Length: 121
Image (cartoon, rainbow, N blue to C red; front, top):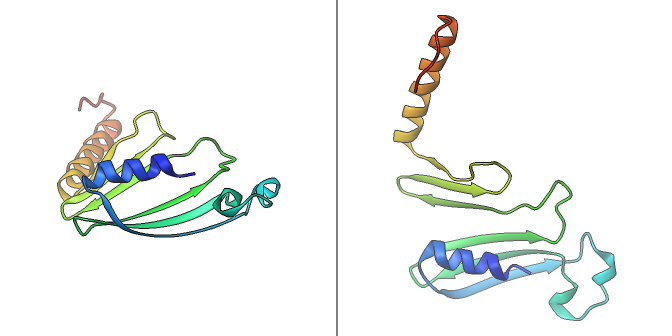
């Protein structure tokens, strides 16, 4: 469990792990609780320290009743990037510059709807 999440974290951090702290438990699949070691875990949390000094936090569960769920968030000094597979367009980038432009676009759209004119943006 989580091997692909660890690979994605390595890719996003552009660095290799130097320390890992993980915990796991059996919360949703009692049929695996009798297995040996971490094979009995269906839920886990992992904290990874990378060689470049950055940290990643990964949480995983074998069950997502609402559908297959994968998400990633990268926080930086200039903003945040989020991806998930729950929306048709999965990448969203949030920063002061982006949020200002988005607010201006929403205002223009609202203004055009009150004027009953089509919004072109």
